[in-house]
Length: 105
Image 1 (cartoon, rainbow, N blue to C red):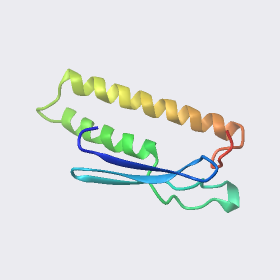
Image 2: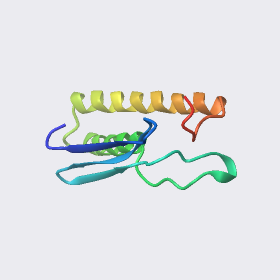
Image 3: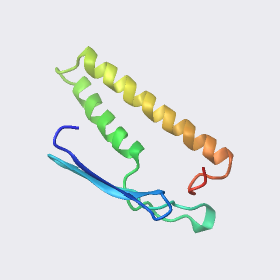
């Protein structure tokens, strides 16, 4: 990534545990910790990868709705949409196993 600085944090037991990514015009604070399930579910405290992909997709779609539309943007939007589909499928699979919101593998 051009001019971006990422600091990923890991817990003592090796789990991803938040971090930050900064670049020109943006700052991302990544989700720290699992959200939990049911009545014990916590509020989101940082960005998920899905959030950032959705933001980028929104911007590309904005270009596509302007005189700057092009095939490269359409291709990028398709790939970002596919990435979201993959991550949503992972979430659905984890929900089916009752481990979504936890650090269970």
